[in-house]
Amino acid sequence: MLKKIIAAASAILLFANALMAQQPSGGVKGTVVTRGTREPVQNARLELYSGAEMLGTVLSAEDGTFMISGLPDGMYTLVITSSEYMRNTVNVTVNDGYVKNMFNLSLTPTISEEVREEMSLTEFDMDDSGYSDSPTILFGSNDIFTQLTSYNWSSIRFKNRGYLSESQDVYLAGVRMNDAVTGYSPFSLW
Image (cartoon, rainbow, N blue to C red):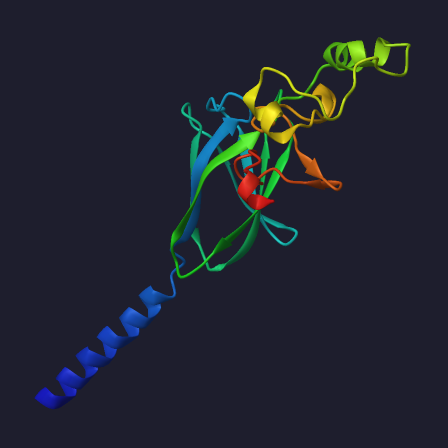
């Protein structure tokens, strides 16, 4: 009789452990920030999709943080929207029941039509000459970088101290080289 009770109790414990192991315990967390200034974005709407099925929606907190928990292992699509910002879509994979930390998810501010028009009328566009009187290749200057390389690729194509990768996209042969998560363009990716 005692053996039957012990066997039944151990079987119940084994089945309880197996059922607890099947509970989804993974998740996604991170912080929603602006692309240029890295300031937190409050009340950004984050929608989690598995294929075409929407699994849930959360809003980012005042400090930009969010947390979606109780996810089974798998691949998900996280869609981030907020007023005054462009929509951002990020693919997320949850493995082994861990909460995936996405760190900083950046949103790019939308550009108003007035600002867009001002940007298109730059001094370069207004230049009627079509050529430059100064030589653009093989000359020296006071800048040590230019002296060592003996080339000047003009200010349109190249900045002596590097691109402003935190505020603009960098393309190489038509391929966007900015990091998908941070928005920066580290030269180690080239």
